[in-house]
Image (cartoon, rainbow, N blue to C red; front, side):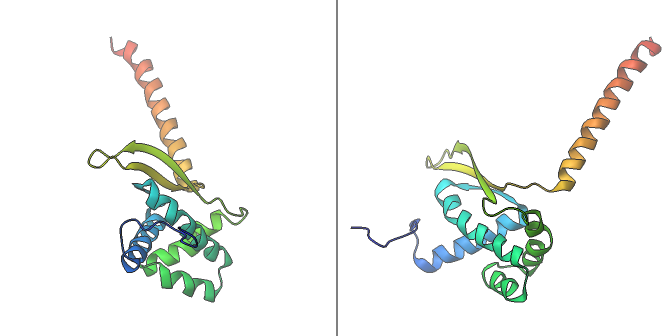
Length: 148
């Protein structure tokens, strides 16, 4: 019976599993989006949510607890300065899983794990790019008949 056996072993011993989760959470917070297997993503989703909750608290003890788990000091400061303020008005649900493909080598279901709140800068940059593309498209059509 599997009573009181929470979590997935993922074919690793406990130290290897903890190191894997720490590396994945660090990468996830750094890049805000990673592709991994569905089982790993489901496991690190709760850990990442806890790290973001620590970032929302923002006090010294929370920063030290996050630094004890996250493997890079720059990622800790990024978490507290950029990521956590985006979720200040949200209680949980900071991450989403998007199923992408089945890995060719072993048939493992792959997912993209990403933050639900994207950077505001990225959204503004995309709008500006689309605007420039539209303007460039209208200029080309307007200038094309004049050159003939």
